[in-house]
Amino acid sequence: MLFIFDLDGVIYTGQTVLPHAAETVARLQAAGHAVYYLTNNSAQTRRGYRAKLAGMGIDAPEERIMTSAYATALRLKEEGARGASALVIGQGGLYEELGAVGLRFVEPSPDARADYVIVGIDRQFTYEKLKAAQQAILHGAHFIATNRDPIYPLEGGRVEPGSGSIVISVETASLTVPEVIGKPSPEAAEIILKEAGYPPDQAVMVGDRADTDIACGRAAGMHTVLVLTGTTRREEAEQLPEELKPEWILEDLSGLEAAFQQGK
Image (cartoon, rainbow, N blue to C red; front, side):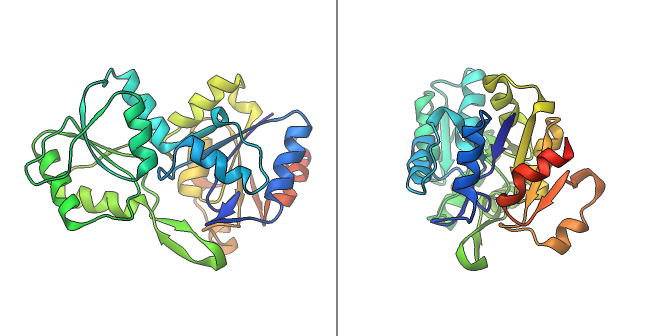
């Protein structure tokens, strides 16, 4: 089987690994299952996430980590965007992944013009960046969002603004709806399925958000598991509309293997 795990709220919150995460991953790997990771968070490169997971006792090869930043870079590479200009609102991971496929970066300014405006999480987001993105889009730039996650979970049940909070600002200012690359789009999950060599019915998406993780898994034809260690509460999970309902709802990852075996 192929297991694809979200990161924020599933494997860790903030800088803290969640209970049962490392041992569950280790057991799956020891049993011969393929384990991949798919995160909407565009802040770091795959290399950066590998190092973060290693610090939590989880061995995750870089080629088994998919981020919305990398998925965006792959899409633009396929479109032949090498040499195209991009005004980027984001952090180091997004810049590095996009730079690796040959995009040229435009500094944010009111008179900046670009082929693309690409928006991810940016903890130094300002009105000046918003205006620059607005003007570039109004002058013809293609607007791409790495994801629409409104919040990211932190330790102790706290949350912080996610990329979606910035995306909606740019969307509002530019009167333009972006193309979204990350979950709930199945695009990144389908790349993983192809690379890993598994059909959708032999793959499991494990996430903490129904509107992104579960929607993505269902759109790709995969099995779906919702864990309550992130942003979704039990009462919310039980009231989900039919199109967003997961096959399993678990308190944490400790019940993953048992739930899947019982459901086979």
